[in-house]
Length: 145
Image (cartoon, rainbow, N blue to C red; front, top):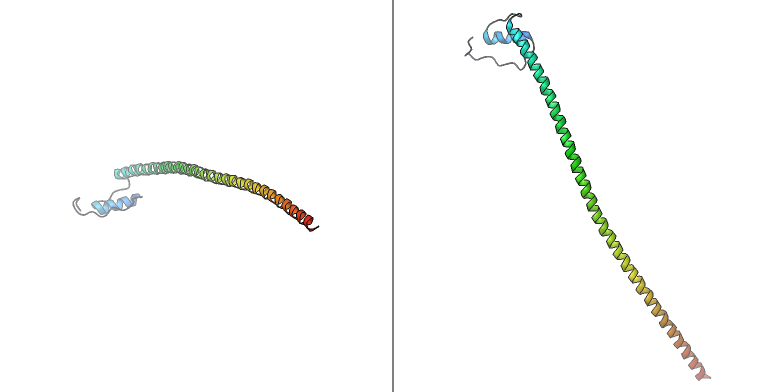
């Protein structure tokens, strides 16, 4: 089999010497002895690949932690902004309600004051009516005698 012939597909993983020897035999039609320098190169490459995978995993974990920290900070900032907005909005609503209640209290005070004045005037008119009634009764009583 030459290098220009179609080679078999690469296996997903070559983890053992036997898998490597089988693939090399399928690819090149040559057997490789277990003490061949190719096995040494394979071992060195495998160690390098394992270290690279560990480094990638560590970097992936660091990236995930960084993204999580940024997301947590963003979430905290958004929650604080929402809380501030709610407090301001609620504060405005409460102030408006208090002003409305104060205005209602002022109107009630004016109504009470006006009602007291009307009661006073009504008491005066009642007293005048009573005096007029007594006067009329007195005049009638003197005329009838």
